Image (cartoon, rainbow, N blue to C red; front, side):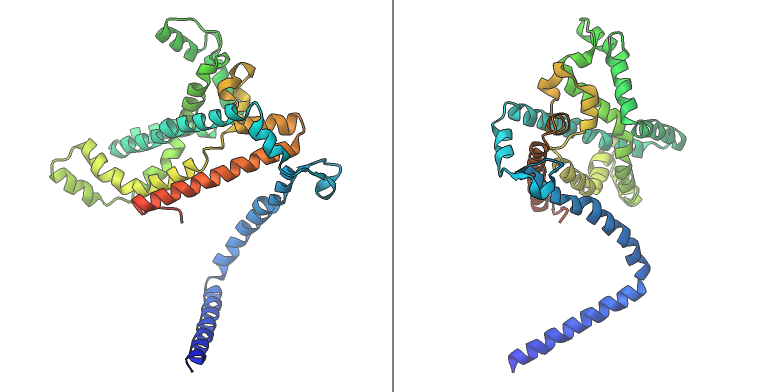
Length: 318
């Protein structure tokens, strides 16, 4: 009898669920239709190409195709891990992205905190416009400007020469200068755009919290520290999780446009190594294998960071 009651209960729940779904679909059918293009985009451009992962396990020849190319197993994975450039590319990838986390991730937060305290709306709009503009400039133009600023006699080169008391030709010819140039040019390019999400999060903060803090004698910096930062902490944590999840990835287009053989020791990352081996040397299997390793490591870092964030802050992606 008990089993029959349970079956009847489950059947009723299923019927109720189906009826609820149908009712919700009829009520919000237009919203569901809007989701279809997004789903199609992900299926066609994100999940469909995943079949290409098999290239990493084959000696892929475009004329032979996927099925007829020779299966080589873990050959390319072993070649990467035991190769002469493994340590260099992994180290450079992590260091460039750690520089980005330390300086590039915090810069938009600081800018948004200061902009949030500006009371002159005209001045605030001018600052926002100036800081947003570099984001909309083509990466090719950005890199061209960086080459001009860092060449012999360029404005940045002159500043560095004045500070160090030495003379440089092109700063991009020195391996030790690549990381600072890459990182701080990235901050200049994205600081305004990246601050938008923090400013939008600040706009939802209850003004009563600031009033209460001001009554208690808190100045502007204390209000930023004890009111603004705690209120936008969930946003910061979520964006930090995504940032850590991309530690194995770099803006390879920008690096390719800036680096040269003289700076390979600090500028050559996994993405640029894949570019040279995969496109320039036509080693598609090797490039796919290395790209797969990078993606797996990124996912592991994302999962670990999300778990730690959930444990200590109760804020997470899932």
